[in-house]
Length: 319
Image (cartoon, rainbow, N blue to C red; front, top):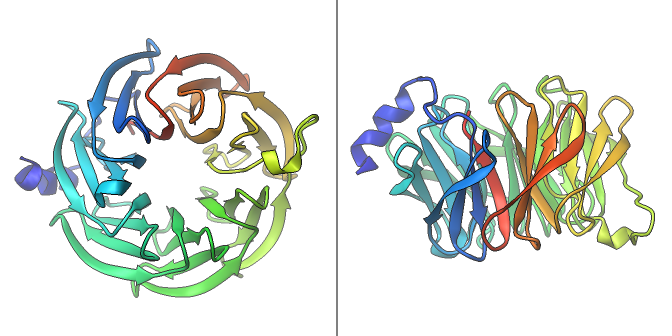
C-alpha cells in the first residue's frame, strides 16, 4: 500500500521513470487513459472512481493524482504499476488542485462546499480548509510559492490566498464563469479564462488589478460558442494556447501584444491541455469527440488525433 511508500516517494527527488507518458481523465467513462507519446498509442485504460476530472503528477513523477468528484476524494495511481494505490481526503466534489513546489502540500478546489481543502501529502491528511467563493474551480500557485490562486465560477472572482496564513488577501473580479488560471513563469502576469464571458483576463499579481484582456473572434461562430477554459503557457512566456470549448479550437496568443495570431482546429469541445516535457508537443482533451489532439508546438499545427474514453477532461504528462 502507498500508506508507507508515499511519504518516502514524495520526499525523494528522482529522475522520472516514465517520462513522456500522458494520463487523461475521462469524466463519463470513469477511467484514465494512458498514452505513450513516442508511439502516440493508448497503452492502458485504468478504471477509477466516479467523475474523474483534475489530474496531475506528484512532483517526483512517481504518482498520478486524480480528483474523482462524485466519490469526494483524490485517487492516487502508481506511475510504475499504473494501478490505484491510495486515496487522499478532500471535500465534496473535488475538481482541480495545485501543489506546492516541494510536492508536500496539495490544495483542492471543492465545488460543492465553496472551500479549498489543504492536504499534507506526506501524512496523507487533511490539515485545513479555506473558504472561497461559490463553485471554486481554477487552481494555481505563483512561481515563488507564496500565493495560491482559486477562481470561483459563480462569484466571478480570482481569489489571491497567502500560502503561509491561508487567508485571502485580495479578490479580483473577472468576467463570467472563470474556469482556469495560469501564471507566467516570470510571475509578471496571471491569466484567467472566463468561459461565459468569452475572455481571458490578465491580472497584475502585485497590484491585484486587471491590466488587459484577450478576446476572440472566429468567422462563422457566434460569440457565445467561444468559451475559453484551459490555458497553456510556453516556458519562455511568449506564447499562450487557449482552449475555446465548443468553438473546437485552440487560440494561439502572442503574450506581448495579447492578440490571437492563429486558431487551430481540434476535436469537439476542447477542454484542457498539457505540454510534453520538451515542449515539442501540446496535447488537448476534447470532451465531445472523445479524443486527444496532438499539436506540434513549433509548427503550430495539429498532427495527430488519439481516441480515448468518454468525455476526456484533464490531462497530465510525466515531468
